[in-house]
Image (tube, rainbow, N blue to C red; front, side, top):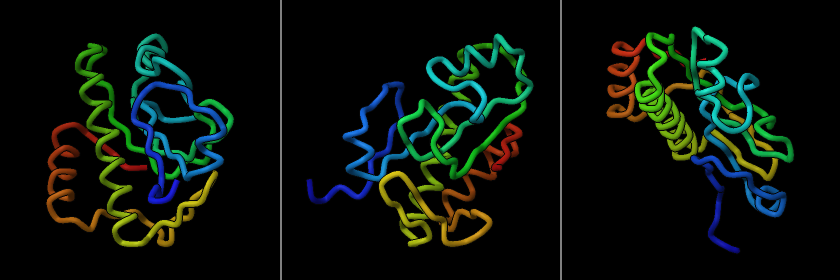
Length: 146
């Protein structure tokens, strides 16, 4: 099992404890947890007439979408069109992935099974290209990092 530093989940599938007991396991969930846990969170948000949608990067544990939260991003909801919300959600989760890669590359996060410690306060993206992309997305889509 050597060579695996962490497992990143970017899909809708439940995983067993064997995985997150063996490796640091993180999930990109398409809602502002703790709201809209589980499957189909965008549909849940639409049914609740949510005014904001977001995505969460969190540590995976035995609960469903209940592990410690590392970072979240959010947008105001301008449309309940599911195609639009799906694209926006994908952008949000991708941005969280950029944050994570930047933290890992800079050595600013320590991952352990069932936990993580961010070594510096105030997440900022150091990579210029990523930051420019984030600024454009933020301006065009009213995107916020929480």
